[in-house]
Length: 110
Image (tube, rainbow, N blue to C red; front, side, top):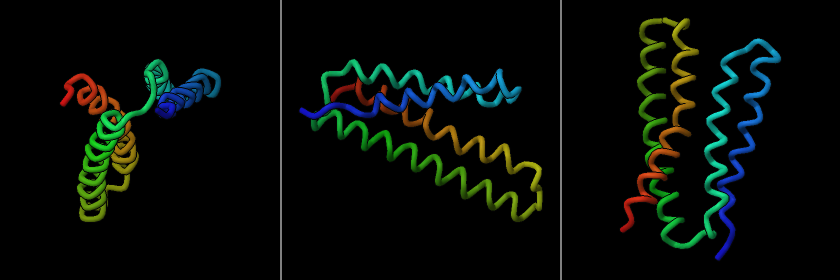
């Protein structure tokens, strides 16, 4: 079995430390990436784990595609460019969808 490298996404959580120092509290959201360190405890990658990752990626991709389509259409049709940062923030929720989907598929079994 090969090593599960997905757990190293937890290193992105260190970007959250920039939040208090720069006064940009939006950076505190990066602390959520620390949850991926839990994947380092797993024994490695096997076919079932790879299939669960593929399923979770599919869910995150579908979410991001739908949100991007509706948000860009809304901004372009209503010329509400002030709402664009909100929609960009919604696109970042794809990583949350991935994490929740992966946890669900890993616990459900086949």
